[in-house]
Length: 543
Image 1: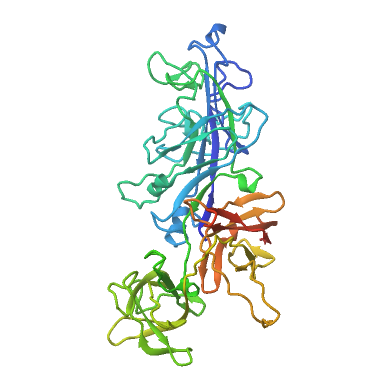
Image 2 (image 1 turned 60 degrees about the vertical axis):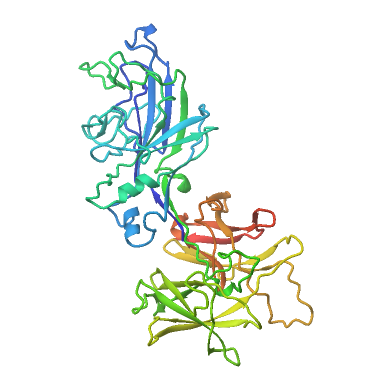
């Protein structure tokens, strides 16, 4: 499992736009839209001008901004709680992405909009509120519950009308939407890590969520004579406030909408998505002798030891979270057990010097240990070797003994097509949202063609796919729920061990009472690209 989503726990839109009456004294600064099912970002320039003697500050500017918050800490289902329990990796091994999804509408969608995603810097948490009217702005807070253009909470004013935000590079991010109707996806790892720092850490920042708004050059132009934000009609009962923005745009950007957390569309609600590379490449079933045709790194084989006690992974008491040692032996006469002959290994991996017979391995995670080595073929190399895991002491305490079938790298006189047939033998028809499921693959060469003399019980070895990725799609509408992670993000890459390729999936990511399909793509270095496989593996999610 290398992907986890945290849905927004509050969101709203704040605006200083004119309400439906278009009267200058009726700005929407006191309105709240916390319960609306969409969020809106826009800038309107010149809808009202001073020529009509309606507003003493010249051509009008109207803005709308989005506020969105997430469960970073303080609950058992927060990002912080999952990190503490080991469900997501430590800092440096995971990326966090803010994802918001386009909501189609009948109005004009501006092109080439530049959005700012900034961490909110209010002194206390802002309130979502219960307003729903995003068109006529009739739901006012009246100084009670809910954030608006003036206040972040009940009678608690922003330091700056329209919200206050961090603007440094570690807390503020930019995204350009060329067509305007794209979804928003921004890497916000740096600020999430600041939010997750412990109390007392000088770099820690309080989690106040994000604001999403147009960059200053696209928010509407307004130059206040005093050089700062103006509050209109102070003392006259008006609640409007205009942003001083002399570098702003003298055109409108109306309007960009996103689905809110109250949307009926499960996969369109705002999320912070945690992604990390949990790929395991256990070469016990894909171990090769060193070759002069391969690099030093490619000649290394990494094998794993999984210490299950009563069905649960547990650390080996004598090894703990420290080092562990492995010695390779050639086989006995019947090749079913190790002989007394240790195998000398070349330098590399956990072997510090050439001709050493002991590999130094280490702790991976609870109950899991690994060791890396290269092995040379020599004359009459054994096809099977035995790995003995031990404590490395003179009075050697052996923990476990396994076996490895060692192969030689193949070469080709042509560019092979690498076409495969894939099956998923452990696929179930339905899964529960409370489980993390492991999906195992059986892969064979498509051109495997046994002769009539081949025993009926024979089948080809399970081919290991070195680089593979999966995606999940909802079958009712072909919505891509989890996309292929085939770029720098490897959160959907396939792992492998002696039983073949596999991946783990937190089923809670999926909406219940729907059917889903798994698609696979394998990297073909012969053509320098990913090839999607024809098979689709179907299952249903139930509560």
